[in-house]
Length: 110
Length: 174
Image (cartoon, rainbow over all chains, first blue to last red; front, side, top):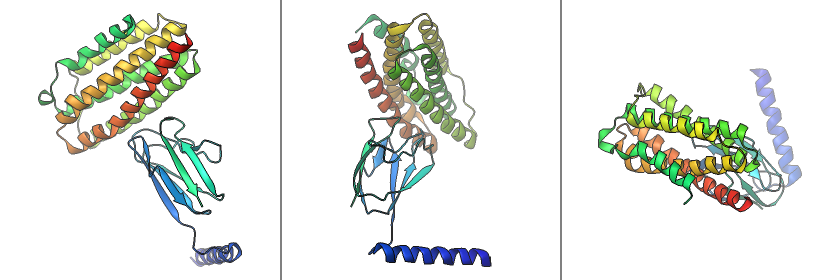
C-alpha cells in the first residue's frame, strides 16, 4: 500500500513538473468519440495538444480510427472495446475507419 | 439488368416473400439472423480464396469480419434471453439459396466470378435490409432483440453501398 502511495505521489510530482515545464494553462483532457451506427460521433472534434481521445466502439462490428496521413492507427477495435490516443501535434487530422472507408471524421488539434 | 443479377434477385427474393411480421416469433427471427449472416460469411470465405481482384478480396474479408461480429452478438443475446434459434421456412430458404450461390460461384473464375459474387452481395444486402424493415424489426417481441436488429441495420446499409461501388468498379475494369 505504501509503495502504491509513493508511486501515486511520484506520478503527481511528475505531472506537476510537466505542467510547469510546458506552461500549460489547463491539465490535459480526455475526450470520447463514439463509434455507432457506422459513424464517428462527433465527426469533428476539437482538442488541445496533449489531450487524449478515446474511441468507443458501440457497433456490433469491428472498426478502426486510422489517420489518412499515417499519424495514428488504432488497428482493429472490437465491438464493445475502446482505444485511446494522446495527440501532441497541432493541426487537422482527417481519419477514417480502414474497414469502412465511408466512415470519415476529423480531429482538430489547436 | 444483367442475367446474373436477375437470377440472383430471383433466388433471393423468395426467402422473405411469404413471411409477415405477425407470423414470426423471436426464436425464428434469431435463426434467420444467424443463417443470413452465416450465408454471407461462407460466400465471403469463398471469394477470399477464389477472387484475384484485391478490392473484391478486401470486401470479402470485410463481410467475413462484420457478419461474424454480428453473429457473435446475436448468438450471445439469444443465449442470454434463453432463446433457442428455431428453424423455419425463411431460414431454410436462406440456407438453400446460399448453398446454390456457393455452388454456382465455384463454377466461375476471374471477372465472371467477381461479377457474380458482387452482384449477389448487392441483392443479398438489399433483401436483408428489406426483411429487417418489413418483417424482422417489426416482428421482434423482445426489446433487446429488436434493439440489436435496429443496431445492425446501418452495417448492412454500408455493405450495400460498398458492394454497389465495387460492382461499378468491376464493370469499368472489364
